[in-house]
Image 1 (cartoon, rainbow, N blue to C red):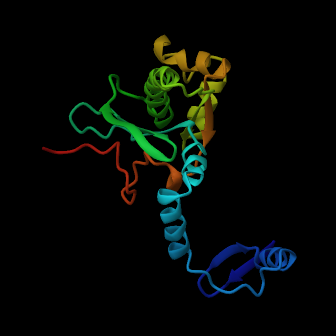
Image 2 (cartoon, rainbow, N blue to C red):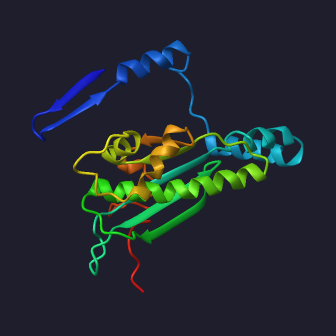
Length: 211
């Protein structure tokens, strides 16, 4: 691990240049020639369609797990100060279900708005799990990604305290799903959250649409 510092621009960053170089040398890739990746993939796709269906089979069964992404803004509705929930589910890397909706209650903190959003996604995950099961796809716990560490902690922690005791009991259903393994929560960086609410995000599922 290398640490670089640019005093003029007041920047500090990490680098693993030496490590990557050693890895390339270890696998004899340090003198490798450039490969036209897109062209090679296209050639394989042609073979897959014509005479090599086994390639298509390998790709099609590589990942059939359901993954969910959830996010929420905070009091974004200027009329009643309610927050907006946004989520998207993927199967095999492609989106299969998504939604953006105003929350039913006014959240008192960003943690609470994210927590209520996670509950909505948890309910949808139960339905999707039943659906893919009818299609013959066995699904374990649904992986749910959220960029709020405090909301994840609240869902995993069964302890009630002063700052959360006012939250409606029905929103704590997610704790049961997490403890039973039906829902697997994981922190994801905001830039990697498909349901991100930031202004620069490509998927602004929690932004209100003015008609």
